[in-house]
Amino acid sequence: MDFIQITIIDIIDILVVAIILYQIYRLTRGTHTPSILMGILIIYLLWVVVRALNMELLSAILGHIIGMGVLALAIVFQPEIRRFLHMLGTSNNNRRVALLSQLFDPKEYQDEHMEVVHPIVKACLDMSHTKTGALIVIQRESDLTTIAETGVLMDAKLTSSLIRNVFFKNSPLHDGAMIVSEGRIKAAKCILPSTAEPGVPDSFGMRHRAALGMAELSDAVVVVVSEETGAISIFHKSEVQYDLNPNEFRTALVQALS
Image (cartoon, rainbow, N blue to C red; front, side, top):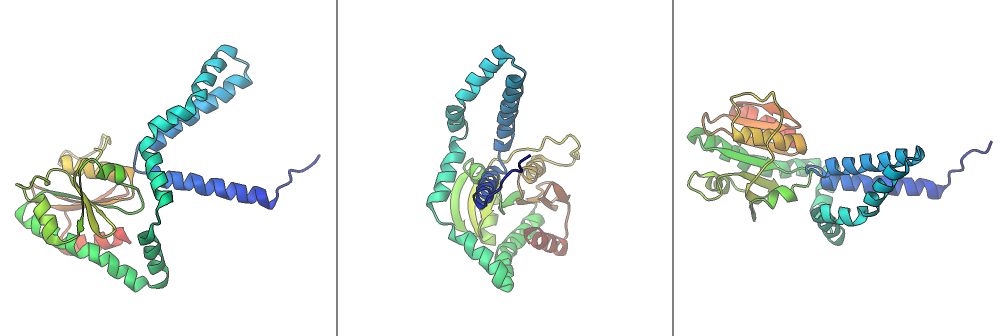
């Protein structure tokens, strides 16, 4: 019996496919795309099983559905394909610099994190005292472009005064979430997916439910200031740290971003 011959080309082929699949996962994480892809995979596996069992009628129906798959994928995943092509055509220098800074100059990397932490902590503490509701999403690896496009794009410098002005109750941008990406305010008045978890405490309002939903679908760090109580909470990886005092809030935010 001959053994399967694996050459260096086969290894390179497997690595390239693995990298492509990982990049597709990173691009679509935080959206409903993985669920759609799973549905497509189930249909394909069902077609393979049906063909193996020689079920001709069902095999022909599924075969026609899969035959239109390329066109259907292009329609369903049009936003993701557009972002993917844009990512290929542009160099993401900020991510490269951040990675090199983290590897070769960890102190500078920590300082860059603190440039995000300081204005957010100061603004949230001020808003907590005045019971001004706020919902801030700090982007990490998950692509939040789709979420940002539901609001008003800003691309503004991250400062505590600007954060307070956005969430001021008479501001036209206060209703919704602020997206912070790469040390800048990317968008405001964004709509977040609300959690479908049945065991959410009754004390959680719409901001807290939206924050939990965002933490469930992405690796973003979400900060909430309660309009009713002024309590500050952090949502990250489906975990909640509720009603934090100033020291706890600063420490928890630094740890989450690290």
